[in-house]
Amino acid sequence: MKILNKYIFKQVFIGFVLVSSSLLAMLWLTQSLRFVEMVTRQGLPVYLFAEMTSLLMPRIFNVLSPIAAFVSVLFVYNRLIVDRELAAMQSAGISPWQCAQGAFWLGVILTLFNIYVMNWGIPNAERNFRELEWQVKNNLNQMMFREGEFTALRNGITVFIDKHENDGSISGIFVSDESKPNVKVTLTAEKGRLIETEEGPRILFINGVRQEVNKETFKFNTLVFSRYSADFNNVDSSRKKDASVREKNFWELIHSSEDEGLSPQDVRKNIVEGHRRILAPIYNLIFALLACVGLLVSLFNRRGQVKIIAVEVMLMTLISGGELAVTNLAGRSLYWLPVLYLNCFIPLLVCLYLLWFYNPFYFHRHYRKGLVNHEG
Image (tube, rainbow, N blue to C red; front, side, top):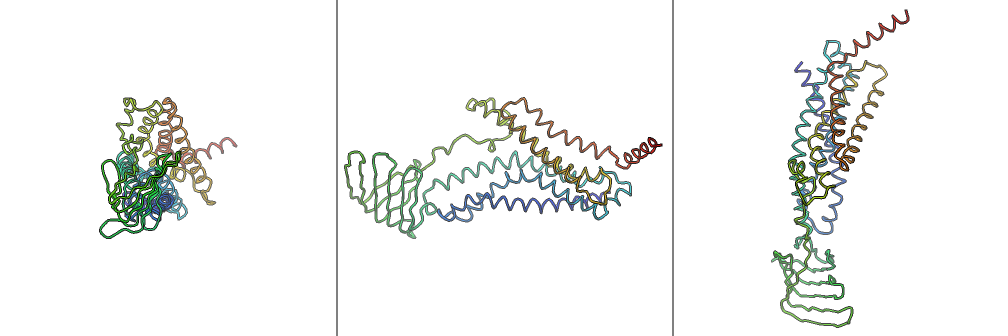
């Protein structure tokens, strides 16, 4: 029996790896498109691009894992039926529960792994991603300013740099500053250097001209300088904003009511997310069992198992849709939280009951016997 369980588990695990890898690759490609502009226009290094997109993978894997488990288990057990392997197992007296051991252990392993991903992997990845995104958007360096291109900053400043020198300095600088509504400032300099300070990024201009025009009075001022320093104030002041829901750990989410800085709506969303950290990983086990329970407890049909597979896919869709719907409702009222647990544990208990206690051959034999007695 152990050899049989290892054989089925190996098949479903390989199927899960192939399905999840394919889905992750497709979703990684779609998610990474929003970072392509940073590579093509801002000169983001490839290693930073790979690091930022890889930090999105825990969140995506958590969503795809139950679906990949369902697809792999459904495919493997349907193939066992088509190849008559499952019929041979049942003829040898192996119960549906024993045949489902491979899917069961795959679901258990994925459940435990997703508990780790949701409670440690995703929060750490979200924090690292936000910090890295802030550095990319706010650091003034060669990555932000490219040679021979105009770079528009978020506060109405446009910068043009002719060339980056080998010693780290820059030459041929042009700056148009319209951060103040009534004043327009233009700076040109032969050379300069990018400087990072605690107050924000600055540029040290060497040998240049500063021209200022007041748009209301049309007063024009000119300043010729040998050295001049300008503060761009391009740093996002929200760097230390409150952590998002995905960045918080389980304890912070459950005790969100103690945080006076959160609104009642945010408190409800945090509490619901805390409960989802417990329930969402269990759907890996539910979908793994759901994919095989119909094929194991139903009688063999030479025409195929299309109807049973269609019913299982529909049930999986209903359970997933129910989880999303109840989560949204619980975010508005915590009275819906028990329904969130029922949506998770009722399908699990039904699958375990059918696999453990339901005997399709016994039911079919007694059903036909009762039908014959009734006709007699």
